Length: 376
Image (cartoon, rainbow, N blue to C red; front, side, top):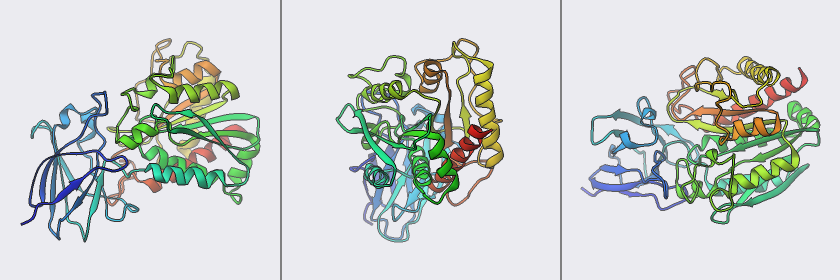
């Protein structure tokens, strides 16, 4: 019986093969470079030959978010277009915490990932396609540590300055699927919500704020192990040029509304985190944020307000995080959108869990909610 072959030597690939025997394998996730963060995996398996695979990813109690593994099911695809969920089970007592994935491929190679990947090749296609649409301006805000462009797409002629940015944490690939949905909507000449939003707003959209980490298969950091969402108080050209480029561009334009798009490993719901606790908090700003949440909750059953992160006490906000820094710096309504790696337990999908399509649909609802919020 031949052993399966496992490979992660590609864009966003991440796995270490500890042992293989027949259709079974013992694996581990490689840490982000110059960091102890690890959780993202992405690899392909060849040679299953109609056998059921048993893939054991070990050592996960030491991962960035061990609470993300119970109830989690790995993403799997055979065409790299449609991603379903494989049978998965987590045992915190086995081999330092082990996720066991079982799957029988239909034929040929198959790919496994922590979430449906959003490749840099697809990112470049997204930028090219959007930049070619009427009324879209492309800007390179700067470059990453390794010299990749920090792409920004500018849409609309209105007075309200809206910033949307994603993948500060590169393993949160659902965030760029969300961006694809947002850009599809905003460039659709037939969409009435988009038409009105383009009249009211000037959108500055950064689909991927961390291209180096994305290529390297990192969970949370850039090429030098820096968590970009802890750099907004004092970004530097050496450690966090990505944040420096975005924040400088925000200083040029000003910000009236901002959304930082993320994914959460442990919480199986869609939710928002705000800017409570910033030094310049006002009840008026707080009501603006609360009103947006109410509108979005009414618009889509995929969003809820009962579960999320603890709220910072007055004056205790972490200003190194983008949402807090942007709200404080510009006196605007800012927020962090979180989508699940697992599923939305309020509206579960057995076949796909939370998925690229639901991320894209949520983007459309977020933008339609923004229009309602602006016009209310």
